[in-house]
Amino acid sequence: MESSASAKPLKLNYKRTMLIGFAFFGILLLWQVYDSWCPTLLSELFARAFNSNYVALRQVNTLEAIAECNKIIKDQQYLVGVVMALDNLAALILLPIFGRLSDKTRTPIGKRMPYILVGTFVCAVAFPFIPVIYHTTNNVVGVVVMMAVVVLFAMMYRNPAVALMPDVTPKPLRSKANGIINIMGYIGGACATLVGLAFVLSDYLGTKIDKDTKLYAAHTWAHNNIWAIELPFLIASVLMLVSAIVLFFTVRENELAEQLKDEMARGEQEAEVADKVIEDAPVSKANRNMLILILAAEFFWFMADNGIGTFMGNYAVYFLGASSSSNMINTIVGGVGSVAGFAVGGIIASKIGRKWTLFSGLGLSAAAYALWFILTFALYGKIAGSGTFPFWIYIVWLLKGFGMSLVHVNSYPMVVELCPNSRIGRYTGYYYASSMAAQTITPIALGLLLKVEGLSWEYLPAYGIICLIVSGIIFFFVKNVKSNKTTFKKGLEALDADE
Image (cartoon, rainbow, N blue to C red; front, side, top):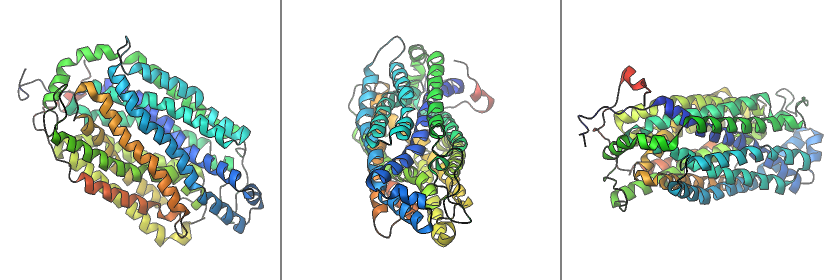
């Protein structure tokens, strides 16, 4: 084999990577709608189911009645957390299973594609029924069952869709490729967010607070209009199907695997690992320790990010009394920060290594939450129940989005760097098992904390800060392995998309 120093420079095929990114486009599109709408819909369902006075109090529309409604909603958040956690518990079990199954699958269209196509199709069909059941029956069991169906088939395609990138990308290029994949995903998330700006959930629910009277604002055309909540789910389903079709007709899995054999073999030689990875050999002690530390740190940064993300919509609606569209704008701002981080995260990692790039992202995110926490208490009387969304939270989300993108763009490549190419699906399962374990626990933990007397929405950032500090302490002990063996194409040469 040619030595690394004299070998032809490795190059990332940007066009192919973007096309593979359509799989992640569909994933984040689905989850953005799911996470933005479902916790609030569940909050309303549980409030009505377990508090017979809730609907009557909403109609009274006095300051005292609104305060009581908000207390009822706050006390139900642990139940919302339980349902959201059950979905993640299913993912914790199913993602590793589908990862290992896809590793062993061989079909004329590839090993990942069958799972992507079937999972996407069933999800797209089932997803729009969540708001239909909510609107027509107000049935808690029906909504939760339909959410479970969506999650089950989303898990079928999520692991294989994510594993498709490292299947056809040499190890030294995976941080840059993961940045492009995540940008495609955030474009999908942005599509869902723009839909949320057009179809405002708080208008449908009638929870928007008038900033002058501090009472519920007048109802709009969207109030109790099923299309206000149905169209976001329908649009998401259609775009998911389109993304899967584009992926199927442009990415030939089996052909690419054959074409890229030499590059993938060279990537194994130049991997950033403590010990060389050998096919069919047990993982070394040093690499196993790296894997455990990365997964443990990942658990806690997902505890922070997902816990706050789960309840942020309710924070805007019930604590600030703001329009739900303001949180959609906040999501877009965070997405802008994330895209910027995804664009440069791989480049920074090539200079200072993945460990310190990721560690810097954790620090920036913790600092952003600290700013949020300090300003919340400094301005509490001006923002609680004000009917407005403070501008400075957008700044917090921009910084947090950039910081967490540095984390995400490097963490997954660090995990699959530690395995041979034949086990990418399995190690992708480990990566998602850690994140889903966190996402199983964190909604319940944060929901229970919100139920404690004296603790309320204003303590969300403190929860995030604590989790990120623990994550950073664990990750500090990950061995820093910086490869200096890889030669990359630079400048205009790097944009060459030839096979």
